[in-house]
Image 1 (cartoon, protein in one colour):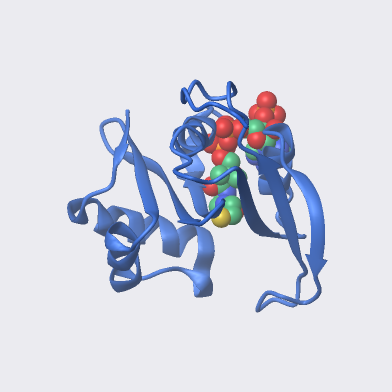
Image 2: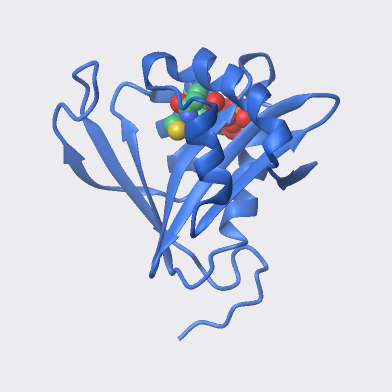
Length: 152
Ligand SMILES: CC(C)(COP(=O)(O)OP(=O)(O)OC[C@H]1O[C@@H](n2cnc3c(N)ncnc32)[C@H](O)[C@@H]1OP(=O)(O)O)[C@@H](O)C(=O)NCCC(=O)NCCS
């Protein structure tokens, strides 16, 4: 089940953050700001336990995908795809989604390319580990996610 995150979810999300993002992990304070911040959509995938989460931030005509992450033991089961589908189905006023990903993150790059993102630019040595950031983007197509929005 994909549903909006609540504060009660944050301890479990914080554990996954540390496991998946190490020194770049958001702590519970930062996560709380994402639950309540303007323009945010913070969703979790929940079965018996929390298996993944995703956070987007809408600013004008762009939705920025800030996080998408799945528990290591549950990856490659389609959970990230369902999280992304939720964010794509809630575009607000945006007409494109953008994100940054480390050039070393092969799994995430493969995932994004599979979901229609294309490479727009590179930010050299953007991350703490010295890796480049790839800037990827995709249009939020009208009929794509069944959101009911009409194109112009
Ligand atoms: C990127 C991530 C969210 C994908 O989650 P997921 O639930 O495994 O993704 P899905 O099951 O929906 O999609 C799987 C598809 O993504 C791609 N993919 C995912 N992991 C991959 C890997 N390790 N190697 C190659 N392709 C991969 C493939 O296209 C795969 O399809 P396939 O299994 O048929 O080959 C997950 O690997 C993750 O949490 N990574 C750590 C956190 C992170 O780096 N997030 C992105 C930056 S915020």
